[in-house]
Amino acid sequence: MNRTTNSDFSLVDNLIAETKRLKIVRLTIDDADFILQLFKSPGWIRYIGKRDSNSKAAAKLYLINGPLISYETNGWGLYKIILRKSNIAVGICGIVKRVELTNPDLGFAFLPEFEGKGYAFESAHIILQLAKKKFEMNKILAITQKDNIRSIVLLEKLGFVLQHNSTEQIKNDTALYAHSLILL
Image 1: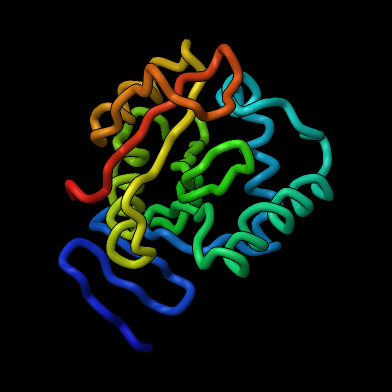
Image 2: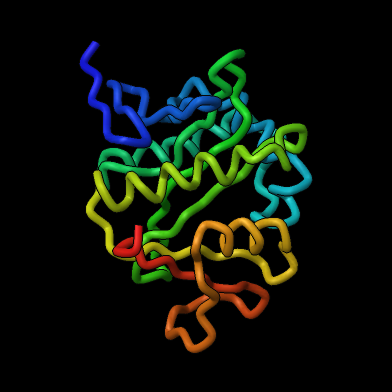
């Protein structure tokens, strides 16, 4: 197995990165059951949006039309976050390219029982490092609903700054944040 180490993360075939507690891996079509769990979680429904959450087929379509095509098109996407000790999938975190935004944005969602344990910060921090060092990005955005306090606190802790006068096309109930990766 070919392993390349770069200060805070290591890259291995399907393994994108790892920390002391987490593994960050590419999602596959076999992750449909896990994605279906995320679809049904209260945080996903409230802040990301209700989808056809009663269908494994919808989860497969989400994977095909989202992360899987993004890996092929962009070389990056959303990744599955797994606990190293138990191999339990706890959430997703990664980079998304939305049509309405000029720059890629950071996206994340975690199962409720794994929220508040620092996994989102830990994985997002590594994703930002990858965005700069591996994917050569200078700026990354993040969008969240204005009442999603947990996400806002996380974004600010990661170094994102609220954009008050943006020309980006976002909904009125959405806040736009930006992070200059040059500072990492």
